[in-house]
Image (tube, rainbow, N blue to C red; front, side, top):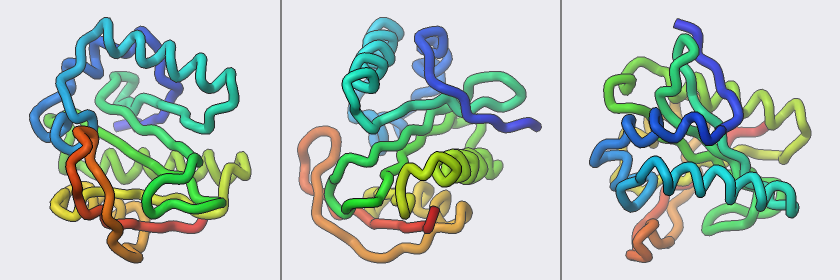
Length: 166
């Protein structure tokens, strides 16, 4: 199976919404997505990128088919400092457990390194999100600490911070 990471486009909206399940909502988005809302989000990311935002979003593709998303953001957040680039990801439930997400993280880290986008890649995940922590470990990240934060709903959570040199 060929795994690639390609820039997110409005054409990916239907596949991304179809790939959502309760785990995606809980750990990644904080709420159910719609096709129209996802298309608006893609356009918003494009506008923000043109205005200088460091956040970029991509699709994870397996044999050309969109099966998830991955993004990076160098703006400071809880547990992320200067020179750090935060990475977040979601994968369709039928694609989990095959190493695809860790491979996509590795591809994105290679791109970030080639671009000189930062010194370290950082994956922050809720301490209870065991699967995301495993992805970080499989992609060569080391868990360094835990920090207090809030989730997509504004609720207090503890985040694990995983780091990998770029």
